[in-house]
Length: 477
Image 1 (spheres, rainbow, N blue to C red):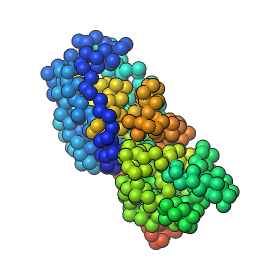
Image 2 (cartoon, helix red, strand yellow):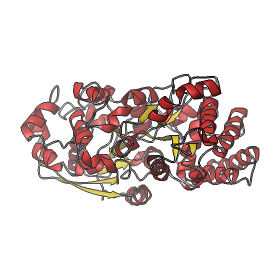
Image 3 (tube, helix red, strand yellow):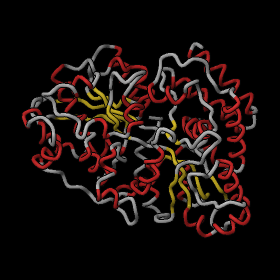
Image 4 (cartoon, rainbow, N blue to C red):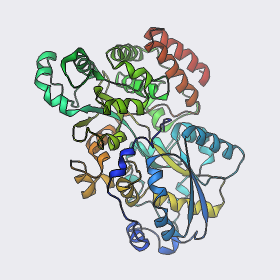
């Protein structure tokens, strides 16, 4: 996903109830419903495979529970965790040399899948192999938008990765303050401030200005943003851009879902994109002044410290926020609507198999993919003491204990966002950046130019024009 220190997201998860390792027999029974025989799970016994991953909460949880997988399969998994930028470099070197130092790849859609999908196994090879354990409940159980965005490139014919994690930006707010001042805000602003599906970005701005004008003693500002000159600024702006009907390229949602090698000319000078830039500049003028120095972690820490009333933020920060003094005081909602829609930027990633690995290691890697993305393992991650993300499967959200955990009190605080997330991932709500091989360079242009705008060095029109010219050169348009 985005270059995202996701180990920080769930640092509060340490207080969650643990899940004892499921015995091999029980786990096999849970996984094997409708699958191949026990022998299929043991077909690569004695094999050792290497998994390279960003240092994320889901991988931390899996690393702590690998004994269950080894008992089930006889396979040893060595996990290497690192920051995403370093991972991309290692994977690129591995693919470029035709090697397989890593058998299972954390395939970020933008930095790994788009440029290197030819180096990944088409997972249909295993899905259609009757001798292999199949994906529990089928690939249809994955959230559809995530399956396409994380696993496919250009068409539905091939599948290169299974959805593994799914951080997504939503509206996180001080529910206690909105409830306390609701009547006064409604009287002053002329609309109900409580977040709903019909709340607009313009109303969000007015709410932010109301708090920043000193109407609430508990906070000094209404909103905070991850607007540092960094990838986080692109993420924050993209929510507004897409909501206003703007895009980085024509057919933006299609390029976000499927990706392309040739995105065409940049669309940042369209009327909708310019309107989004003007609004974003206006919004940041009433935001906490620290916003331009914060990434996702910085803005979450400031919110936790009571410096402002609301923020667009990655939903998995709920885990740490609900373990702070704000426990029980926070509300979650899809981001506001613009003239086009509500857009909630998705930052998920899939895991795939290195096509350079030997046939035996590919089989072992497939068994690991099935296990690591299974409903049982995702439930384990939700309950893990050391980390764990939120599920990428509908069936996990449908489990009675997970449904119960979506209301307080809960031992799975990320599930307090569940109702919001199932809306945010719908096709008409999910926000998807372009899945193109040149994304890293394009991303840098976006946050560099936007940073100049926020510093008052360039107008929105100059910013979008400069960004378009630079991006067009990068993609050869």
